[in-house]
Image 1: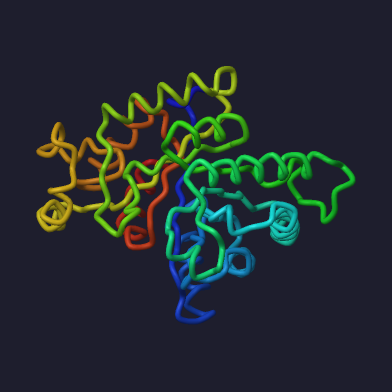
Image 2 (image 1 turned 180 degrees about the vertical axis):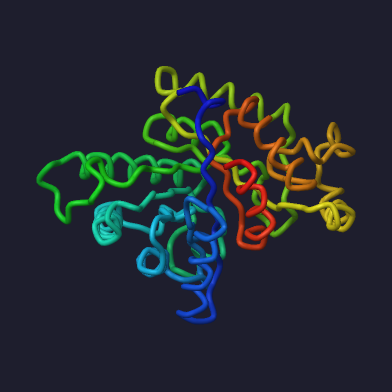
Length: 295
């Protein structure tokens, strides 16, 4: 199936609940709005991903659950395999396992884990992905995940090294569309031309797997017309100069009426191959109207 023909999937990454009841309510609301996947981030100060996913599964009927995405260097690979397999088993095969290299130095320091160089962290991610693939492929492995090959692997990244790892191991490749604030600064958005170049590089790496791997984009914000001016005042200084006056073209932003945003996503699926679209909880409600149109 070509990317342009692949059906859309939508996920929302939920943030910390104030209570069990609030978490359940959020998960059910996501399902009600038509989301396919509920995501849980992996940052200190937020809920531990796997217990939160188990409760989300109990509270809902059909949505899949994903870690979006784990700080992979936090985890021993064999123990992570056990966690993921158990979660998959207890949710009847609804888990997607998202992996990232980690980028917040302060979280590593707080956890007492060495914050290695970017290259070392990517190597750790690659080794973890290889271990997960090997263990889940072993028919004798226990606990046995519900999905025959184990939870699909989502690998997130933008740089050459991470995309090489993703091309080898991922079922789903997640692109951020905006450079993370490594030093506490603002997000730096990536323009369409740079995204074209990244996607061409990724397709070359994927080779014969290009049509079977799903491509994800994280939308940093969904902006209805009444919020456009305030959002551009916030983001304007950090937009690429070639599209600063056309922010609707940025892959990591969605701007306009629900119909306009639906059209933008269809165009991006055609151009870049993004059929799996993720939003943050702050955009859950406005994105719901777009999902309804695209169904």
